[in-house]
Image (cartoon, rainbow, N blue to C red; front, side, top):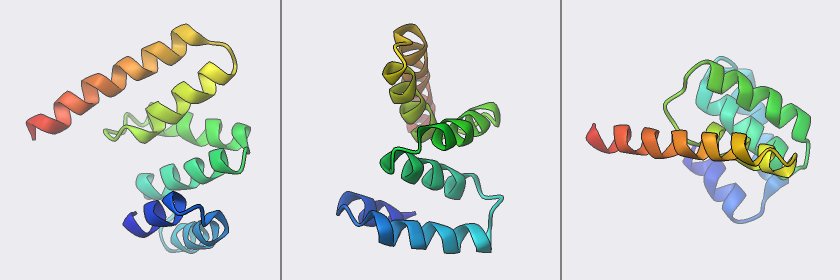
Length: 101
């Protein structure tokens, strides 16, 4: 996940895509890898695929914030400000839970 984050932060999206493809082949059931994949889809403006994956992760009730954050961005992009705010509010709750542990 750190390598992926560094590749994204440095704008090396094609390298990140290769990294995630290899990670998905190795462990496609891992929710962090799925989230990284969806984030990459978002960066490549493949919004439908990103939304599908982030929705799956949210329905799985994952305890990390990226699916909620990117879903909020997608909802805002579609003009659904109330839904975006709801998702951002969940991030606040998750952050508090993570700090407690």
